[in-house]
Amino acid sequence: YGMTAAFLALNRNTGQALCWGIGDKRDICSDVDFSGVTDIYTTEYAFAALNKNTGKLQCWGAKGYGGDCSGVDLTGITDVSSNDYAFVALNKNAGKGQCWGYSRSGSDCSSVDFTGVTNLTGGNEFFLAWNANTGRARCWGMISGTCSGVDLTGVTDIFTLQGTFVALKRNTGEGLCYGSWRIRNPCRGVDFSGITD
Image 1 (cartoon, rainbow, N blue to C red):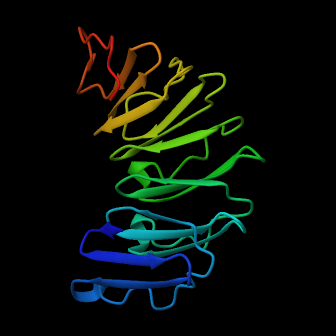
Image 2 (spheres, rainbow, N blue to C red; image 1 turned 45 degrees about the vertical axis):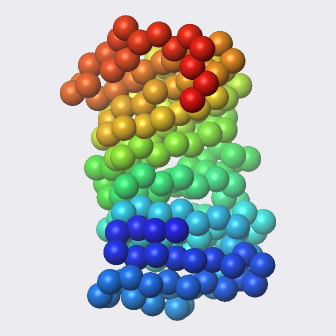
């Protein structure tokens, strides 16, 4: 796993990890307990390690970019996603989400309704959460709008670029685009018929 100026190598079987990098990024995980860790997430300047079996989450790195989750309620965490500068943690069972990191990049999700959310995706500086069964979507961070009118029913893949995403339906060969005001109609005229990747 890598972020700006640092790397992490994990042995899930033994619960041991190695971290290395440049300057003050060297040996930055010596105080982290990797026992039972199932997933690693990164921003450009921070790491997060999750044990999905217990819901335990540990964060380290630059505090302003996700390295400090000490003030986050991490009870019952089932999913985590990251973008370049922030993290979001989801409790599917309770329909609750917690965000932290850089404010403009999605660390404030206090107005987001996570009820029924099944999937999370991080863009460069935004997040997308949606219910795969109903297609209902929510966006926040550096993206134009809240995705309230976007229907992601049947979507199989999400691809992101800056403040834009493309949602692909492999089964029907359809594509849906939603983006920043700087990238208007990002897939106008694109025929997704037959596209598989």
